[in-house]
Length: 154
Image (cartoon, rainbow, N blue to C red; front, side, top):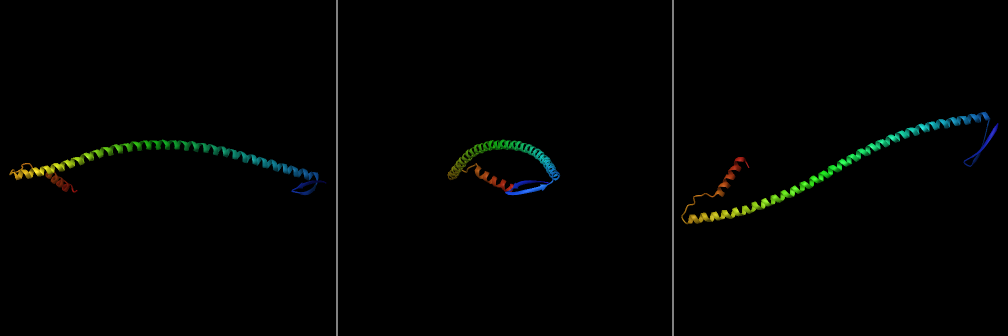
């Protein structure tokens, strides 16, 4: 019987076994190492396959997201363009409306002035002994407006 001396973790050991048992131990250890190596290779192959698959999925998703981002950016640019056009149209229309309102306000003022003049002229005609033949169209239109509003239910 032979003995094998070795040190492990600072401690010395001596194993005494027969050559046949030592060969069986070595063969068993070798078989176990070979089996573990095969299993490790299988796991590495599976991991490699899964990694490739994952990389493909990441590439696909990245391309999809890039396309989506590009579409959204184009949509945002279009919205900005339309927003600017709309703002410009609103400014133009507001300017037009202000001009119209100013014009109408000026006309209203002028109509009020003319109404006063007509009233003064009517009084002067009556004081001169003349009976005005023409009716005041502004009083008539105001009365007609009230009748229309009453008829429509305003």
